[in-house]
Length: 135
Length: 159
Image 1 (tube, rainbow over the protein chains, first blue to last red):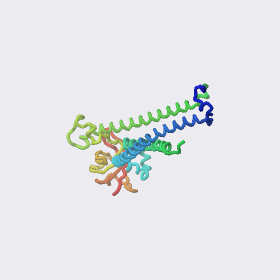
Image 2 (cartoon, rainbow over the protein chains, first blue to last red):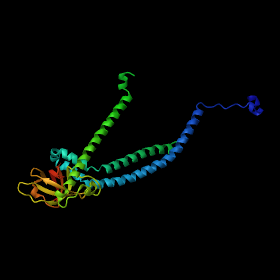
Image 3 (cartoon, each protein chain N blue to C red):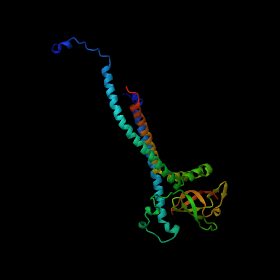
Image 4 (cartoon, rainbow over the protein chains, first blue to last red):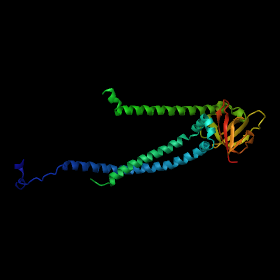
């Protein structure tokens, strides 16, 4: 093929390729693709963090109301004031504590915390990818 | 893979963890089943004996669905209540005191207070005759077969 090339280019010396250039170019392409999707995920995780924080506030207020309504806090205060009686009637105390637990609202609070912390973790990871030092 | 290598492998640890999670889940499920059955059974007995405990005409099962016992559909606690005394049946000699308590969720329950029940207000020990209407109390007890609770311990809050 060299003999088909125009004459001025026949004697052109090919530049020496540095070692690992090809691999670095591929890595850079992959990194940029990742950063592009990371920017989209930053928006998504920001939204889920905000929504879960809002839901946490709602669920916490509901849990407070349910705890007051169930009388559980007054029951738990007996552990400090009347520990001897609590031990004597430990089976009934335990049953009453379990019956009084506002299961759904506590589950809601814990679920909101779980989603918030998970979203925050993924958000921080992707923020580092988007705004971190480029390769 | 020989036995020793298997016991030291990550797969074995994962199997152990999975079994542990299943065991914990089953125990928690059983506890929920027990508490739910206790509350449902007590609420049923309460409904069946409502006319005896609170007076008025007897209402059959169709007119006293669980959803009518309280607005939110929850069952009643079978082992105690926190609320305000709204009625005290006069103490007859040798008989047990009967209290009607209005809970914080506006549920009413009948409490039987024997002379053996411990009653405390602050550091003082009280007798059933010392209880007054409108006192704020917490009761721990056991359910009987008439939809009532036999008090074992009563803590009076405030004056």
